[in-house]
Amino acid sequence: MEGTVADPARTGALAQLDAAPIFICGHIRSGTTWVLDLLSAHPLVADLFESLIFTGSGLAPLLQDIHWDFESSQRMFDRRMGLGQMLERERVLDDVRALCDSWLARALEPQHRFLVEKTPGDARSIQTLAKLYPDAAVIHVLRDGRDVAISSAAARRGWQRRETQTDDPRAGSRHLWGIGLGWARQVTTMRAQLERTEIRGFEVRYEQMHERPIETARALFEFCRIPVSEQQLAELVDQVHFSKLPKTGPESFRRSGKVGNWRTEWNRGQRLLFTAAAGPALEKTDYAPPMIWQARALRWLLMRYEKLKGVM
Image (cartoon, rainbow, N blue to C red; front, side, top):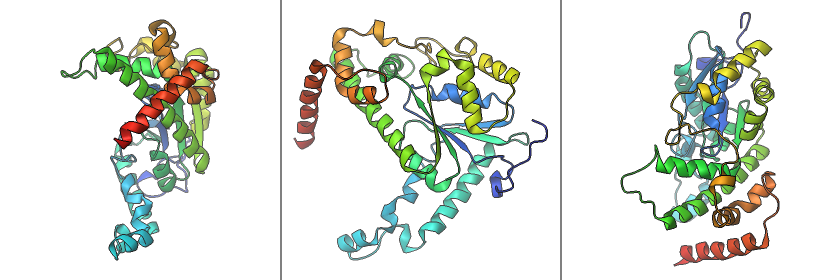
């Protein structure tokens, strides 16, 4: 918008921004791309799709405490190890931050005043973000784990399918159990990380984006401190409606965008298995009531089996 002035507190490669970078996190197939599409539809917003800079596949290992854990390395090797041999922690933070700034800035054009990056799939990235950009904003996109599992299974059958992949029912059951454990672990970890750090966090539910699109979009833009008029807001929401997005369909990256498909697509056994895997997290996120005794018993048996597999 006209009259917007860059934040005087920001310097260096990202000096033109009005605020620190905005990051979108969440379990895969939870709607993180939809949130990115919505925010980046605004003309003042630049976007990056999964740069992986802040994950375990990127620069996160450079900031791990092991580099400055001299007591452990001295005990094990009788000498120091890691970056701490050469650099103080603050120097590494400064250097890595400057490097990240220079890379992120490549996404900016002269009109951009905000930068949004989507980093799903790695709850630990929040720790990295908090160290590098303590004034950043993090959006956690939360979706019912059962719909996440449905979407994940569809992706495995569609755009993620490998030639060696089979439709063995046992493989499907293992995947359902695994995605349930993974969803519960990541959602729980991500929420805990956002509470533990001082970084600004905002949780948005996939279901809210469907049920109350305008109100949810308004809350997102307000949290990001991106100026938007009511008319512009309505236009942006309409622009990224699933019916307007490219490459949607059963076997596409963007599937159908529906809510509650698990109710019609799963049989009783599938519901029980996923509840056994993710029941506690479904309850804590208010997606489901407390587990029934059959699910608790199945969870106990399968967790015992997982533990035995780790020992054998």
